[in-house]
Image 1 (tube, one colour):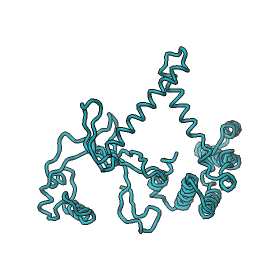
Image 2 (tube, helix red, strand yellow):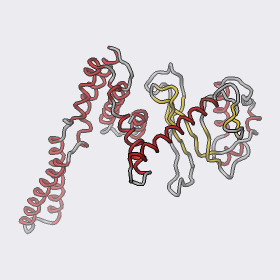
Image 3 (cartoon, one colour):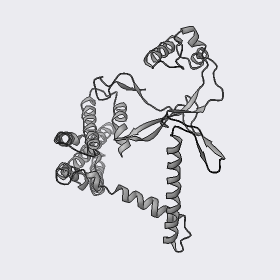
Image 4 (spheres, helix red, strand yellow):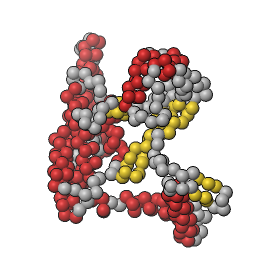
Length: 353
């Protein structure tokens, strides 16, 4: 759910990017409503709060409640849907009887016109009934209004989260039971979790040692890991194409990309990067003869919310016109930094490509 809050605004903005004149206002209200709910959700994940953050949460929740009716038609409950279907069947039966009684007195064109009017009447009546019966009066929606008062009384709500208990039940109980032979399962579950915990601690120790200044030897000297002070959270390219193109010029020709535009983008990238030993040349002719390779998979580490040392790996794939896993081609959208932190707007200069 936390990861959904990060991308839902951009996905919805992309899906609703081309409204016609009749949809423009509804689309703006929908984006405002989702944005307010996402902002409220992100604020609730703060480990500590101030009067300002609580005021922000109340304002976001108020904005959400003021604009939530735009999604009211999608909140139909099962009893409401059943009642709507029952009334629609009764109305359709009455209309069919009426048309059958008047069939001998009207022409075929009048019958078609009457059928169209009846169909429109049924649709309008169905929409009115759904609009009248639908509501957001559910317990989860009501809980949101108590969040700020509970933070003032008890502190951060994250301290009372049951997520860790549910996760522990899945990892410590269900997985251990599934790997047991179901005889004396409690002892086998404890043994399985003990081994898993010991291996996890071992892996963390190896990772910590690998970041030390000096090399270390694991086991009886059979494996040596080099020292590394660089972070392990680097973008990784995967999926090397078999028919790789040799130079940048050939790549532009093969992909039907304007060579001058590619060179301008490369030069802009070079100007923005910090000078180092591996800096790309700034000469246009030399750039065109650089060796290049094609990849279809990029792993992007994204820092977790308020956790600087925890990263989520987002996988972006681009197969062009080729099939992805025996299906349709896959070309993911990614956010590109086109501005800086000082840029105005919610996206801070980022655009979707």
